[in-house]
Length: 86
Image 1 (cartoon, rainbow, N blue to C red):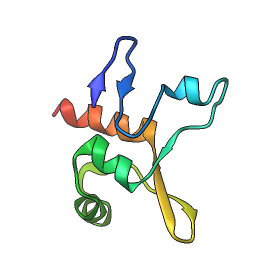
Image 2 (image 1 turned 180 degrees about the vertical axis):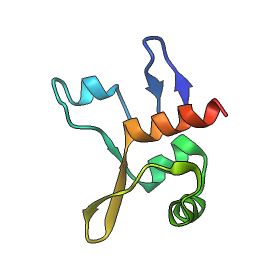
Image 3 (image 1 turned 90 degrees about the vertical axis):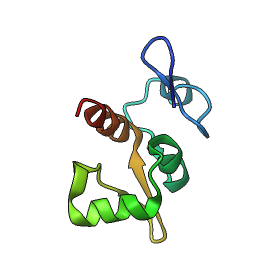
């Protein structure tokens, strides 16, 4: 993940900034398992274990349908920033 000017991140699999994709939107962008892996460099299995064990205070998943989950991008980025300061 690359930090761009203006404080935005270049995230693999996501084209454009959140404001370009969702202009005038207050809804957070939701990422899937593949994007979570690309952004955090943590495998889905490790992330799942961290969720279950309560390790690292990882952001909660959002159930999108009966077979699909996602995470709020802003919460994941905040989590990464909090980990960098440790």
